[in-house]
Length: 408
Image (tube, rainbow, N blue to C red):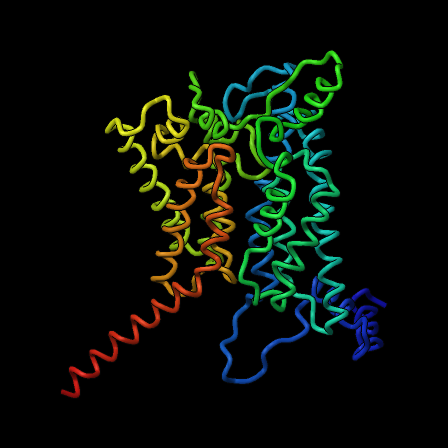
């Protein structure tokens, strides 16, 4: 008997019983969804929620694999074990040692994210008697890509439970949540365990452990895990920085955000498959550039002295904001969440623009944590329904005016 037949028999055996959602979820994951449309009034298409989620995951896999190489590379580079790679194709980057170390650190994050998150989803499905949706497939992949590589696994597990329960299940599950679950998880980590989510020691594997050993009196060399944003926030100069290294991703950062090249490739793939909204992506970038230009103008006008704590990030060339932080990753994979984003076309332009605008504002005015993308997206998640409401009301008023003119 084939596996499909065995699963079908299990579905029939447990049909109407408490554990039915769990077996249905397994069957849906391996095969087709349990429920499909049958009436003639429905528009049939080959895509469904599972295919949509799998498309996003395919766009994220290159960032995940690259993040493994970069995690190992940044560790060995910081400890002096290797020399800096000569560009994106440098021999010291694409090595088996980097991949092994990176995979050893990153894969446990993926396993905990999926294991704990899906366990909570299955538990709620069984208790509430509804089907397990495929929405967490993307969330489970996003979470490991937006956290530091050395985040303790138990912290991640606690945050995932909080994010799935508070950010999703209390609203009714997939399709009903008002906040992006992955960003809810990251926000919980940031506010509950800030020392593990910010600073100059968390973005390179081993930096936190070295600092703890030094504090305990052990004779070891300290290594830095500071990002470029952190350096700019300290009002320091970065001589000799290769902008191509920023673009390719040869810099410290969270697992998936460093390679802007792969993020752009993922964006094009999502746009081509019509899964991601190009309006939100483009408007987010425009908003970030506009805010960067405003800050550059303030610096050029001499309104902010170079001794100000805001000077470092204000003086960053406006276009450089796109390659030294996670603004691109947020614009492509977070802001475009179809559940929590604006639904109207005009609303998407407003929604994305404000995300980019506010992201750079938070980045500059909060030097203690010079990255505001996730906060900006969560804020706009809350206001997305309001934006759509006023867009729709504006359209209604325009049509009413046209109707009055015709009937006059």
